[in-house]
Image 1 (tube, rainbow, N blue to C red):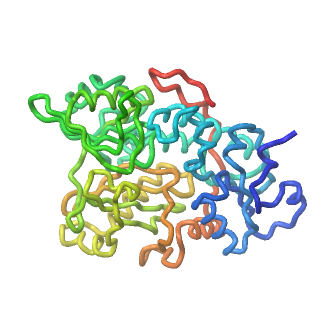
Image 2 (image 1 turned 30 degrees about the vertical axis):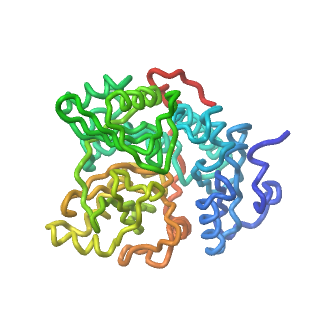
Length: 412
């Protein structure tokens, strides 16, 4: 009988060969794709630290077969399932790979699989670097925003924050919530999206004028597709069609805050926090409201940004501190990427999002004075484990996420 826990990726040791082997360093297991940059980077970091080659379990096997097995003492890392077309079909169903819709089904599939992996780890005496219950919160922008708010972490105002917030069912519902909240400029985000997929930077002016800036391409048949080109829709009919197509998967609304700039471009920060310590950061700059690098954003100058904060009356330690406060809301997760939004003039800072798989900063070493100056994000995580920091195991076995209103449930 084939089991996902027994079929390791090429180059990984077989489970049976590990039984009874002497353990002199942590044995990592990565649930991911052997060819992804995250998995390759983490495996290289583990090997460089003198650990055995991490065993790789394929997301496709986990999703198809379940019945994952671990060895006592193994340390399990969940890596992003993005980039694997087979995994995408298993999570979202038979949609075209470019389609934006289907994020609610994707979310339920990922959350259910992570919970099953956590149960297997508890059963077999393995430990998790990522708490499955926290992962379910991190991948729901409404729940994540609500948790940050409850902890006093500064975030943009939102009428959809938290588990008890109203859920807009369509464009009319979005307009009503924004009007009641006094928001004429807002980000409309798929609740379970990533990489700015489906995000609209929305502006509503008098006389019924509406404009949305987004990477979404609205096809003639009404379907939505990801694009690398940021575009503007200037009619309410077009914006309503996009929002109505996204709404069944769940939407999150946030105030669109004026942000700091660098070299004439809008700027924000991606800060990686490992074991509670913020050590790596990049400035992301863009001429559009979305600073994601794959949408035309470029890396800015971190040293210049930090040096300029005191000139605006701010504290240069604040971006690091606010990222650590946000990460502290997820104590069972070894590493998160925190999107820090600097206000105009680099004087104030808020947290936009906390990302479970936010450590993909290849080639970047830690910032001076942050304790990881000679390590990349993956090397820092391995070092934290070797130093006795998390894994802290997993939290209580929580029930499956509730179905998104307006869309039937179902795991996979």
